[in-house]
Image (cartoon, rainbow, N blue to C red; front, side):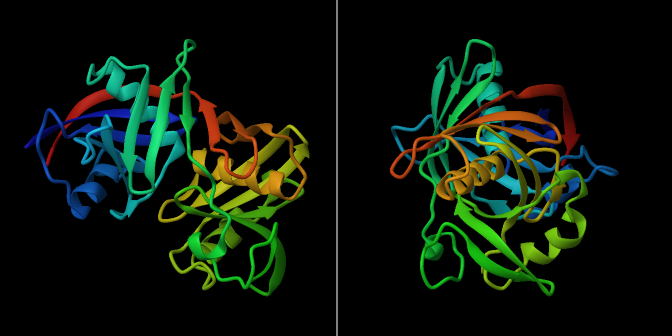
Length: 276
């Protein structure tokens, strides 16, 4: 079958987006791996699919697959691309879009400057729900990683994140510490690993080693989790600019009981067809 696709990126975090409403096909893990392969396929960090929702008051179902074929709960950069995609393909004329994900319902809004504002929902700080092994909820936790002890934050944005403080993201041990921490036994579902430098109360720099992917140029949920962790620890203000290798995001969180709001760009690169 010839499957139509659109290649997109959010700050360099790249995606293949596939409309499974106007074309019917059941993607399997080996299809995902073929599509995501940068040598023998299209190449991407993740494959996103647009599907018919299972709930009547929702506009779309949004599914996210890592390059190795596993399905994950949430992706902030992908959500912004999703919003641009469904409007550009005229699957909806709405400016505000409700989307069903594995992590729950999120709301997307395309702004006048063609950025996308995403209501990411409330962050999860309860260790049992992240999930993360800890006796009590705390602003930070001692975590032993490869013989060294780190004071880390732990947050779920629908997917689990651990945030490691560093003095300089450029020299942070992402390649060494990232893979070890991703599979740390205290995170039973594995974890996305963020390396955060707090520049000032309104600014952070961040690199993220994503679960099942490796380091990416940007991670929307990682930026949200890092800012929430910094706010909980009393180190950041409510609105923060997160600088990632691929570009910048605006993250706002007003505190417990409130959703995290992420705003940033989404870009279409090219369109095509692939034989599946």
